[in-house]
Image (cartoon, rainbow, N blue to C red; front, top):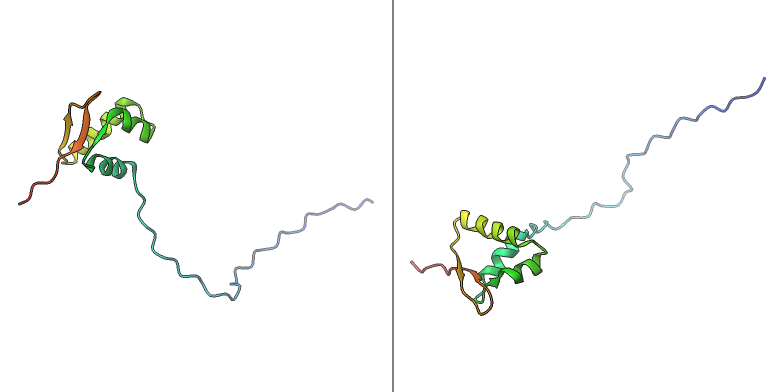
Length: 97
């Protein structure tokens, strides 16, 4: 009679610690979103053109305009002013109370 190879049961992993103390992790910084980056770009004194925002974010023109519209819906006053070659978008400075 021929011997058959039987599969050996897999070893269970050992869940014991290595004896080393656990590292204390620093609190994670919140991620910077594209919306945050867009807002920061529009808060600059010189603002930004549609083309500059397209290049910076790699977005299509309609996506840039939709993101700006989202900022407006969030309560920010985004101004569109004529520039030398195209419109310039910027967030209006907050009025002092």
